[in-house]
Every structure is written in C-alpha cells, then in structure tokens.
Length: 204
Image (cartoon, rainbow, N blue to C red; front, top):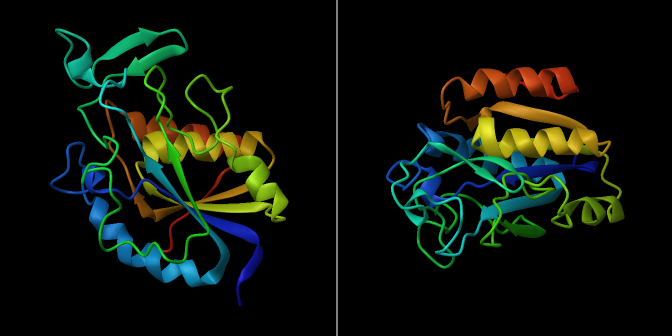
C-alpha cells in the first residue's frame, strides 16, 4: 500500500556523483536498484538535481590557485571548493541512466545561482533562500520524508537537517545513500542528524 502522507526524496543521483563522474562518490551506483524498488511504496516521489552554471563560485577552478576540497569563506560562511561538476546541460548533470525518473512528481534543480551553493533540497547554503520544496510538500499533505541518495554527508544531510527544522518527520535510508567522507564529514553528519532526531534506517 502506498504511503499517502510520506514522500521519498531522492538526492542527486547524477552521473557526476557516480563512478566515472567528476565528483564520484564511492559506490554511488550501488544504491540505484534499491531506490527504484522503493519508489512504488510512495505516492509522492521527488528527485533533486545539482544544476550549476559554469561560473559557479563553488568550483575550485573559478578561484585562481585554489585546490579542490579546500575551504574558502563566502558571504554566507565556509564553502568547500569542489571539482567542476553537474554543469547545466552536461552529461554529468544528467540523472544516472539506471535511475527510474518516471515515478517522480517533481524534479527540483538546485545550485543554479552562481554566487551561492545549494546542498539542501530546502534552502541554499545561506540557510535562508528557500527552494520552494516545503510549501509544495505541505500542499500535498506530506508529513514524513524518507531520504536517500548522494552524498550522505553533504546534500543528503543538509536536506535531512533542514526537513527536521521545518517540522517534518525524517528517515534516512543509510543503505540507499553513500558518502564522500571528507576529513571525517560522515561521522560528523551522522552525529548531527541523530541529535536532530533524524531516524537512521539501515535494514542491511
């Protein structure tokens, strides 16, 4: 039976985050079959998609002399500088070809403003500029969110923490997510999510 008050939010299962991509997450492709199998259990499925202009401020190569994975200070706070990835219209920005996209009622593109990154499905990295996802879910009577995707310690975690802050009940399918784990970022993200009340689910 389909969940009527729950939505499955699938975060950034895109070519650039899967093996062979510009910002590949180890094992990123391994979660796709499980995500596809989970979709029919939900009446509401949302896919998010990183969607960056070529001049995006989070790209290390747009900062002369800066190395990928270093941190710089932006007006909204610290920002990791990433390898160029998920550029608008590129193959890297496309969903992985094995991901089922037809069940999605909404595809939410984020990170399209050059001056600010957007990890979360709900807010850009200033934590104030909304993507519009919250009212879309509220209008459909959604109270519970189940999250899966890439990467656990960045876009998935930011989305989960914002969802809890907005009053949703949130579950994270750890078996259907994979992490970058940058200098201990996975452990830190898991602790933050647990402390915030995210229900961590791993049936493996």
